[in-house]
Image (cartoon, rainbow, N blue to C red):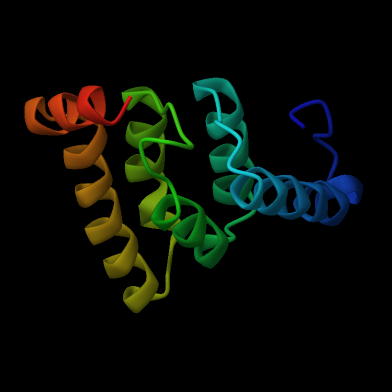
Length: 114
């Protein structure tokens, strides 16, 4: 996905990301931290904030293995989200996501699920 940097490919890459994300989530396939980071990067770089929000909201212990670096990347780029409602939703979603995946309580809960 990251090999297509030219603007001329942007819509095709987003379309591919959407198809991939839907297939992964529908088929309950686990996203590695690298795949999750690539999807997040594409949605962030293209400012597809609602798609990013949808992706993050649908992640749980069974389908995602995120890294804190990816969450940090999103937080830094929220300044480019000019829709205040969506930005607020993303902030809340990211906060919950961090607690779920990276807090002590979240890590313990994750161990119980697996």
